[in-house]
Length: 52
Image (cartoon, rainbow, N blue to C red; front, side):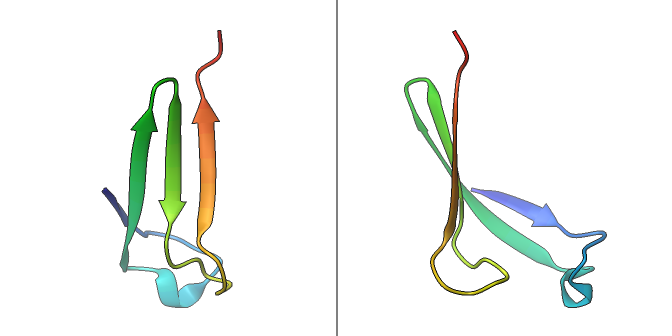
């Protein structure tokens, strides 16, 4: 997990707050998960893969 301290945002109510993100590692991939995205609905998930 990582904690993000929000210093500036297009969402004024986020400024000065903290948000938690979940990181998971699997071989050459890292997945970054935001369990509570600003738009509601499903969690936001991004997967990065190491370039070869």
